Figure 1 (cartoon, rainbow, N blue to C red):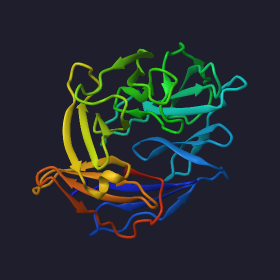
Figure 2: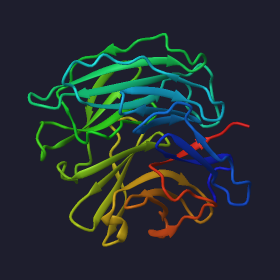
Figure 3: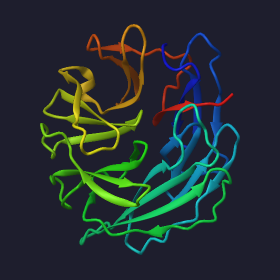
Length: 313
């Protein structure tokens, strides 16, 4: 494979992480690493380098976990009023975020979105900051301004593009409401509604991803039609670009999610997570516009999320 030499791929499922090397000609990497606490219904929130943020959906707990060192810290619980039954998170960091620079002074930022289960539907936001160098829980959650938006999918976590956390949200608390792209600037702690591609119907089903300081938007049109859009950096002044489209391909009948991008003499290829009864990984070649097989030694058969990791050493 032509991915970055020191990059590994983590496969997260329930409360454990299985790590494999991108390069099939080097040692396979690390075996399965289990989170030290017995949590149920664990969800992946986000990552930075080899540090993960995970949430215990059953009990409303969140942890910062470093699988390689075994260090972890559980954040203090956020105060949730009675009747607020939906909670999702967004995980970011406000230090240097270059792949080759793990600055111990990075500060992790976690945004929590809570929403009522019954009418009137109301959403509230809280923020938590934690210094990476100490792995301590000395700070507390701070309530932010109320927002006139509603969760699009109750289990969908936010994505981070390097400076802002993003969600696709509904403008109105009804099923067929138009969707809006809501960004949260972690430096100014302010929200902003940003543009989606002009060419799409914003009532369609969509998925959002972020890596390489870019936003990746997957739009599911009529049956058998999927478009993947990209926007560089968190700037509403930069237009969206349609990266590729699928027509009547088996991918277009499943949920797909961009995971990473490789560059080689045969052209850039997008690593895609393809949903279904069991998830798989495949490649999309941007030069040939064709789907290619992805091969990885000892890849787990079942996983919830594929996570590119930067492992030091």
